Amino acid sequence: MVLALAVQTGCLLVIGGVAHPAATAVALAVFGVAGMVVNVHFVSLTQQRTPDELLGRVSSAGRTLGIVGAPAGALLFGALAEATEVNVPALVGAAIMAAAALVVLRAARADRTAAPSADGEMAGR
Image (cartoon, rainbow, N blue to C red; front, side):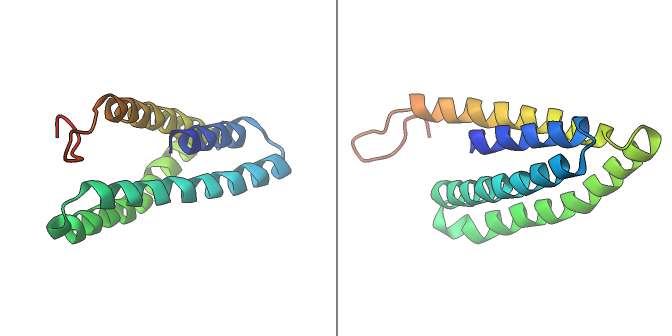
């Protein structure tokens, strides 16, 4: 998942930094494929870490945040593009995506250091 987030960050840098339409089209396609990888990993992790009795609530809350976030981001980044230049939102998005990748990387490293106990449960959980 960290690699896919890093790929998405690179794609946003291409979109924000290169003015060639073909490069932008390729970057958008790769961004979409990497987004599918992130989505599959996110859903899998949610299912693994959420107790069965809460899975529906947690899944619906995550979906709601994702659905609400899309138009809010469109408004915010649209206003940013209007106030600056068209490429600035992609570059700002790349910075946000890089920060997200670092957060996920840190969480993944923390998971690796927690060793499973004899009953299969992770230590510290």
